[in-house]
Amino acid sequence: MEASLCAFPTSKSLPIHSQSQVLTLNFTRIPDPSRRRQPALGLRTPSLPLIRGAISRTKKEATVEVVKQQLENCYLVAGIKYKGLTVKELQELRKSLPESVKLVVAKNTLVGKAIEGTPWEALKPCMKGMNAWMFVHTEEIPEALKPYRSFQKEKKLEDNDFTGAVFEGKFYGPSDFKALETMPSRAEVYAKLLGSLQSPAISLISTLQAPARDLVLLLKAHVKKLEEEGSGPQ
Image (tube, rainbow, N blue to C red):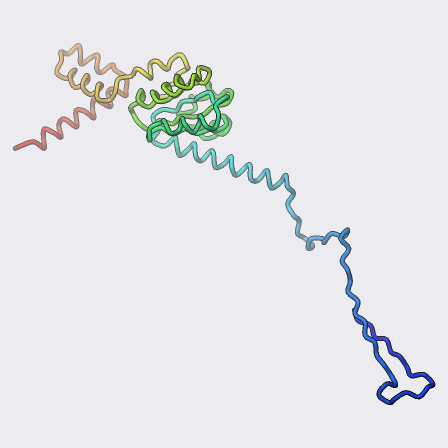
């Protein structure tokens, strides 16, 4: 804002160049800090709870996607009691696991969403309390479980046991893990099943009554043997 004040000459004689004087004043408006600037009409600033809710929802959706990705080409999923484990212990556990085994910490509800409508829904009985989830991407189940057993014994984590697992669509409770941990290796199954092909009929019948996993391994071993024989010297 600008204002001009004019001074007129008095009755006394003044020089011609001093007969009038103009004083110019500039006024600057000082903003009132107590008055907040209002947002433009039609625009509203999102509230903090709304922003936090959106971030939380995004994180949950990302976790569900991570679990779904881990379920691809997965042979076994096992839950582990997570309560009481420190961040350092969790990091050490991850380092002790082979490349074929991944450990994911996720809420039961989010894992439940990821397995909905799949054979992994059999995991639901162990969805109680705080769980870390072990995803095994190898047929060598005993070798995959062994590192955690060693870690559990070394750190004296008796309370942090397996809460359950699903293998080939079947649920295994904590007391059933011995069956998983003592399963024969793939090489042992190959040797046993190939040997049964050269055994009497009664052995062949017992072979045909074996679990589906063993029969699949038998067929793979038999195909491999035929390929080796076919690629030999003519």
